[in-house]
Image 1 (cartoon, rainbow, N blue to C red):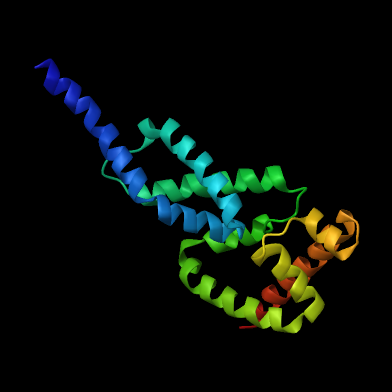
Image 2 (tube, rainbow, N blue to C red; image 1 turned 135 degrees about the horizontal axis):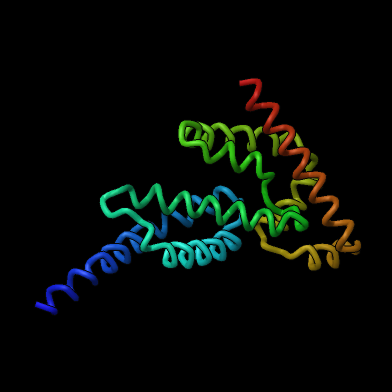
Length: 177
């Protein structure tokens, strides 16, 4: 009889682990979309997993695990953005909030990508090259500064200006469509 009780107590843990494992890739994509940086998304995913594990007893069996996990991930992204605000290599919290509205998510992603492509076509080749080196090439700001023979602060400011111009362009295009 006590074996049955022990098995009954373990079953929710097994189910929780199964659901948590099944949603990992989806959570990673969601977090990466919010942050715009796959490396940072991996770190936030790990923090999200820790929070989910700590709050496992708060999950209502039979409810939507994926929605619950996404909500926890959203708050972890918000905490990460808040903590990294000085770095300014993350999206504005308002934009993150807009992207996470369920009714807007599917259409907004495609619309934002189209707007981003258009806006990337409008920036100078020099700015585009700087963005590609930093984000596609994964080159650090310090390495970029060294290769350009500039101070890291100047490169950070340059990247910040480019990102702000892109954000303004994207917001303008989305608002006008």
